[in-house]
Length: 559
Image (cartoon, rainbow, N blue to C red):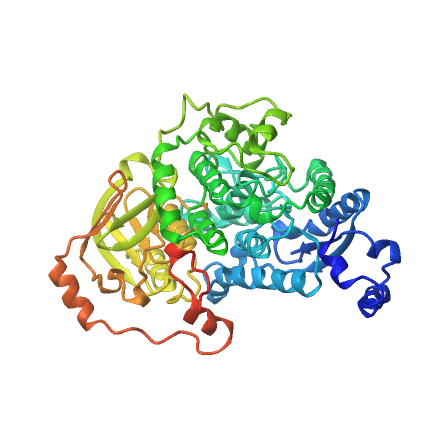
C-alpha cells in the first residue's frame, strides 16, 4: 500500500526529510510505517480539553499497536464559557476557521497519512470536522467526554451555566450570597465538556451520528476509564482506515449529514449545530439551500425521543447511561441512511447491530420511536419578513405555550446593552428583546446571547418574554428565542430597521418570524438606513468581518 508519507520519506531522493524526522528521534522502522497525526487541542484553559493529554497517550498506544507511527501537534482551543459576555466572544466562532486552517496546514505540510482529531468543545469540534472534510484523508474525531453534573440547585443537578441563572436570582433576592458562593465551588465537579446538552456535546454527538467517531464515542464521561479504552480503540481504527484507504469524504456525505440532522432533531440539540453542519457541508461543496431544505424537511418528520438538560433535569452522564447516540439511532433507524460508511470501517447498520449496551435503558431520558416526547421540530427553521433567508429556533427548549408569541420590540444594538437593561429591570412581560449587529460580520463573530437569556430566566421572565437576534444562542438556553436571523442587520437585513414598540410575532408551528410593519414602511426605513462602521479595523477579526458569509451559509470565510 502506498502511503502519502512515503512520497516524502523514500530514499535516496528524500533523505533530507528523513534526517529531519530522525533529528527528532524517529527511526527507520518508524518511517516505514503510516504516519498518523494527532491533532491535540489540549490546554489548561478549557475544562473540556484538560484531559486530552492523557487521552492522546492512549490514542498513541492504539496507533503503535496497529502498526502506525504517531506525530502529535497542538491546536488552539478557546472556551466559550470563559469568553461569554465580553469582547472575547467575538473571537470564538472565528476560531473555528483558524482551527480548520491550522490542521490543514500541518497535515499537508508534513504529508501525513491520517489524522486523529482530539477536541470536545463548541467551535473546536466543527473546526476539526471542517478540516477533515477539506483534507479528504483518513480521519477520526475523538472527544474528551462530558463533565459530571454538579450539586443540586433549583431542583436539578447544576452545571457551569447555573452560575448565570443564579446571578439573576441573586439580583432579584431569590438566593443569598452564601448559596451563590457555595454553588461556585460545586457546580463543576470534574473536567469535561459542560454537563448539559449544549453545542459542545451536541457536536460530539453529531460527529458520532455522521460516522466520524467510533460507536458510543460521544458521551462516555471524561473521567471514566472507558474513555481511555475508547482512545486506544480509536488509535487502532485510524490505522485500519489508512490501510483500507477510507477517506473522510467517503464518510462525510449528504447522507451522513442527514443522519446527523436526524439525531439533532431526535435529541433536541443546540441550534448552533445548524451553523456548523452548514459549514461542514460547505467544505464538501454541498449548497447551503440544500442543507436548509434538509433541516426543514427532517425537523418536521423526526420525533424527539430524547430530552436532556436544558430540556429536562437529566444531564450528559444520564444520557450516556440511557444508551446515548447508539440507542437514539437504533430507535430511529428506519429514518436513517443505514448504508453510510463510518470510521469503524463498517456501515451504520452493522454498527447498530453489533453495539453492546452497558446500562439499563431509561425511558425518562430516551423514549421509543412510537412514544416520543414530541412528534417533530426539535430544532426549527423560520422564515418571514424579519428573516427572508431563514432564522433558527429550538422548540425542544421552549415550553409549548410559548411556541407562538407576540410582543413589543425593545431594541438593542449590542449584547452588553441588552444585558444592562435586563439586570436593570427594564424588560417587562410582553417584551420581545431584539439584539442586533451581533451577526457574523456585524459582531463580528456572531456572539452567543447566552447571558441575556440566563438573566431573563433568573429574573422570572423566561415564559413572559422573547429574544430574537442575528447572533447565536448556547445550547443550554431555554425560554422563547430565535437566532441566526439572515440577512443580518450589518448586511442591511430587516432586523436593522426594527424600532422600539414595533409588534413582532414568533410563530413556530407555522415557521414564521413576522414584523408587523408594512412592506412599504420596511422599504422606506431601509432606504434611510446607514451601514455601521466596522468594530475592528486590524487583526484577525477585521479579516473575518470582511470575509464571513451569512449564518444560513454557515458563517464560513469566503473570498
